Length: 484
View 1 (cartoon, rainbow, N blue to C red):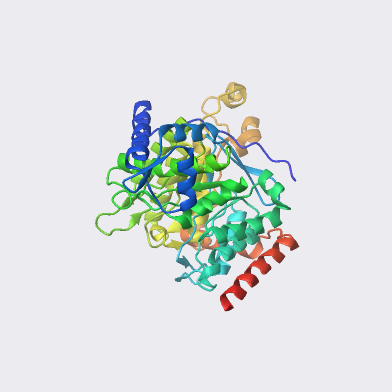
View 2 (cartoon, rainbow, N blue to C red; view 1 turned 90 degrees about the vertical axis):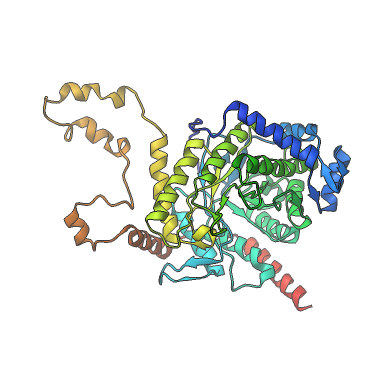
């Protein structure tokens, strides 16, 4: 394993809730769980809660406050995520901010033709390889629902594509517990065994309840398996305002908080200390189009509020940014990507997904990923703030400079210019004549060229032979079961 550079921890900078509002939302959450309750469709989940002191009335399971308090006490405040080579690259804890793609889009913008088309298994691997080369994309998600593989094997192909295309940590989705069990087998083969995988996890499950307050067996069993195995997971609800959640953001936050904490309770009852990512998705359902808006300000505002809850609970938290409702990568996309990335940095969100989504999460775009990478890098420079020290105050340089002169040739400038200023990779600062000489390329064209260059040149270490063998065995076994 190579030595890792320290990952800076940023202090909270911007808030969505006051301390009093945090407590109000927490108590509202407890009331939802204990008085309203949830519809529990998973028998094992029901038994786990009932044995721990929950009760059933009006056809719902009611969860007492002490189960929530105990779960919060048991849950770890840090999830040490590694890459698949065993290096600690993404310690999920409050104050650290990490960005990655999104999961299951139906379409993609073809990087060669520009066509909007159905996604394929190759897209998963190609986008993972692109993200592997982008320095400010910290983790991988599938960005595709491949249309060219058997539907029952969809998520196995996605996971295989992600780990073939990148060594970075990944967040994966799955259909059911059988999928998660097979993905776990593959991951253990990559890590060198189950014990090594628990010690150095490189994957995290993203599972969801159905808002409002429906806990289905297919979804909860995925969480239960991960808790039993002691590998990272999250039970991330989507109480989008006006859709699965109340139209008011506070109501959606209270509902989503209840659903997320229910998952935490079950995970900690099964395995105290099981790694669990806290959070929810609180996008707005547009009342005119009924789309779930990925570019609206309500989602970043809800994220800021849930980060205040996360700090109250001392848990690393899920979030979203770097996406747009625009159907193309245009000025609207740039505005919405930048706004959401900045908001997540200001709130110090922990695990920020959906970078590179366009068309309200229906389509993935390599160009959007490349542009977002530049936005993230620029914003990271901004939120570091101003260093004030003998070196940066430059008193000796100011004493040397001739009044009315300049600092361009001063030794202090020569010694510090690389670190003192932010230097763009993609953003254009050429003089007009130079820009014309280079082809008058706009931002989309430059992003497209960079994506194609990375795909043509970037190499990723191959998977261990044992992992490829396990992938083949699983897919062959599934095919045999289908053929009967």
